[in-house]
Length: 283
Image (cartoon, rainbow, N blue to C red; front, side):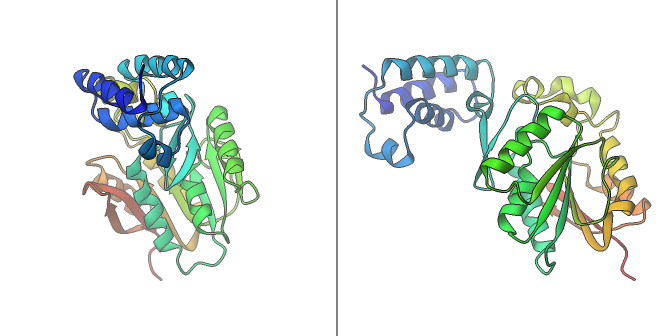
């Protein structure tokens, strides 16, 4: 006989023994999901026995987690900006560090009425949809080269009640995009190609290569975005672009060479420069 509390403690111990980074948190999330219990039920009813079906489900999920499959991939969803997003093999798994881009963008849009937003490489749609959730007067376009990712993004928009203000288009960057936007936001691929083989298995084996590989120096996507911005950013608009660790100076130079100023680079909660802001020079 296995209770919820016992299942969490035993699973956490096995995950810890395997060297996984957050064993107790993973164990709690997996047991709660296997039982279909709410947060309150997990606190109030720790002695509830697992059914046979729940134990079988949990055992299968444990096998997958021990094989270094991320919890979000196992469950098919990830929380980002307090919202739930479906994730599939076609999409990058949203990371908490990317919430820095949302915070930065909302600050830049504070005095902009009915802003138009362009999300390049939208993936799950998490950046665009988080912004639309916070700004009911905004509308946006999500762009991705992956048809599978676009289907996930559109599904997430529907689940969040944002379909009326979010549209999506298959395009290599902005090749199929017309018009100008008050905000361009992007979490582009920025891993140096030669470094991909050394990434953690959770990333290397489960995130799509299209969303990881930034080319020989990790900067290919930044060059593409810097080239397209002049045709798609309003004169008072801003771009907010995610950075990889150690890339701030090089990426800033790219955007400055394309004619933009870089008024600031915003660090994430770990202090790593994460969100680069680009804008037209002041007249």
